Amino acid sequence: MSPTLRSMVAVGFLCCGLVSACSSMPSLPDQERMIRENDLTLHKLTPRAFVGAWGMPAYQRAEFMQFFGMKDGSLIPRSRLAIGESPRGWEVGIEAGDSLFLAYPDRGWLVVFFEEKLVYKEALSAEKLHALGRSWQHEDKFRSRIEVPSTP
Image (spheres, rainbow, N blue to C red):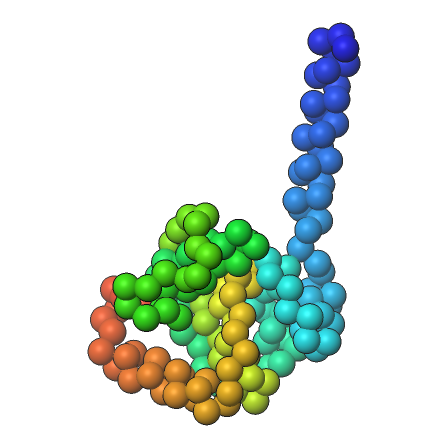
């Protein structure tokens, strides 16, 4: 293959990669439809779509969080594990940054976002979600302004 042809092929692959990366996030109406159909696909849904489809959550929490990166692309929040534990099968890596937790007891879901994308979902009973939400509210009483992430 000539160097010119090789360069053209490389540019073509780069362009295709950029187009697919930009188009990988469904439109907001498509995201809302997916959520209403209970198709909670990781990395394809945003907090705005959940609020549009299900309304405001009963509880929400924004905080800096460490995540365990799993082979399947999911990120497990450190707070969802016992102290000192790592998730079964964890080998990939760790991410850290501002996260958003939304608890929907009426739907039975805890959904967690990192970089504005759904990275973790957990089906829980309404009782467990209410207990989690109450614990967030209790902890918030003792958080300083420095500990609370700024909202855009």
